[in-house]
Amino acid sequence: MDILFWSGGKDSYLSYHFYKKINPRRCIGLLTTFNEGSDIIPHQELSIKTIKKQSRQLNLPLFTVPLPPKCPNEVYLEKVGNAIRSIPKRSARLIFGDRLAPEIINWREKNFAELGFDCFFPIQDKSVDELLAVLEDAPVKVRISAVREPFKSSIKVGQRYNGNFIKELPDEVDPMGEQGEFHTEIIFENKAG
Image 1 (cartoon, rainbow, N blue to C red):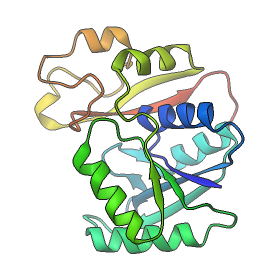
Image 2 (image 1 turned 90 degrees about the vertical axis):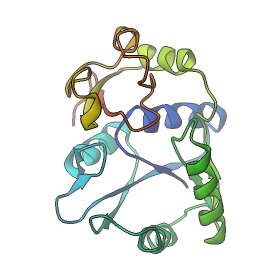
Image 3 (image 1 turned 90 degrees about the horizontal axis):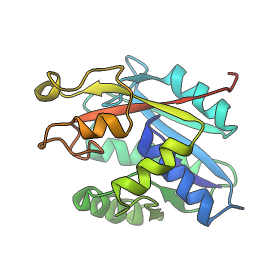
Image 4 (image 1 turned 180 degrees about the horizontal axis):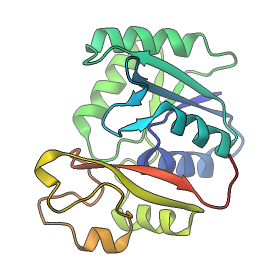
């Protein structure tokens, strides 16, 4: 079983899509870290209840890792590493939704390699057009779940993320929110759960 780090947003979903496309027979489990005091996924501002619903809708096992607020890197790596090692039938491949963030990608590769895990980045360097086409054809809606303070005048929580949203973004905002300008939630259409 490969482990996809799942935030509940578009990048996680896109990573799942592209990974399954090139590895259709590999089993995937989802791993989500969350604030142990609030049951909220940091940055995404989604509840762990929402993440559990998504995992049911995808019919994938979910492994959760509670973390303290403002968790230091060494604590994060220890808790996540221990959680991954405890997963039955896991492989050493970890899947992430990073795209154009070389410093984060390098950090993950270095630190998780030291723990004995390989990292894979299915959407790395993919174009916005290619990613948007997948989202528009998928049985999902994408909505804005969180916005950083400097961008709240132009982006609103609850807005639909799509081609029109991207066209209306100010020039200083990355269309995928690569600098953390905004975060998203995937909402599955026509699915129970």
